[in-house]
Amino acid sequence: MTMPSWTDKTLSRLHIGATLASDPPSALRVAVAAVVSVIGSVAANAGLVKWATSEFPSTMNYSHFRFVDYATLTVVGVVAASVAWFVTTRVTSTPRWFFLRLAVLVMLVLWLPDAYLFFRHEPTIGVLFLMLMHVAVALITYNALVYFAPVRSGLRAPAKVEPGSADETTRALLTRSAWTTMTFLVGVEMLLGFAELLSVPFDRPNGWVIRQGEAVTLVHGAIGGVLGFGALAMYLLASRDDRIERIGAVVGLVGVAIGAIGGFCCYAHSIRLIGMVLMFLGGATAFFGYLMPTIDDAPQTSYAQRTENS
Image (cartoon, rainbow, N blue to C red; front, side):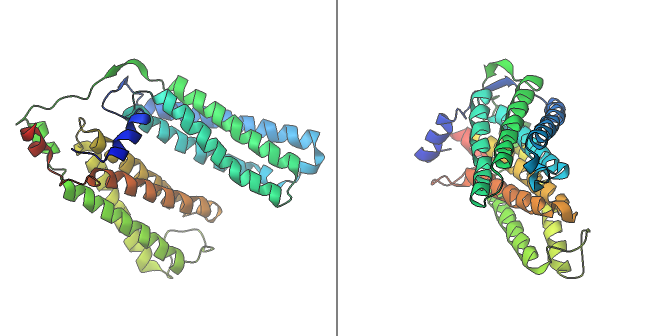
């Protein structure tokens, strides 16, 4: 599969290639590490809030120091980081190198809303402690994931598939039309999400469906279910020795999963905004993942045809 030069160079610079870690952590180990990270991060943030409110009485009633607020955001952040670690260990030969830089970048991005609070003339001490809380979560989460769900040493090359084998026939199902269909469905799902945002009141009571905007909500949910099954099928059928297909399937599945989590969060009014953000981020991630295998300038051929030509 011929790749555009900019894509190939970008993947190489990020150490995303055909040579992968020999033994990435299982989903169970990542989940255990996530639980450890959540407990440690929430405890650390609670300690920092206790320190701030005891040493600086002016922060006693600071709105961002409410336990339910920072605990919820911490759980969402740890879950996102755990998913990122799970994916990173499966698409790059240097997962810790990549994940460390990703963690630093995300922490800097999360500091931007904190910096904005300065311009709103919120308590300086309170904002500084918020920034310190982000650092604490980043440090705890990074170390929990890389040590409790480590990547075993050694590298492996993707497995080869013999021409004419049953595995080859199965993988040949993923043609350009399959990736294009998934990309189209994700785009439709995102458009329906925007339509639902306009037709369904944001401050509606807890619940899945209400009379106002009911049709849009039902169609949105139905296509979301189709996307879930499709994303899982793409992940299982994607060629493991074609790095673009492999990365696209993993990124697409993760994006769909994040969007689904966001959809469930929209049930409760208290975390509805978080759910909407997750739905948008998940949709954008999935769209990019399924778009990757289709951006080649040359016509896409099936896996079987590529094997015959090689």
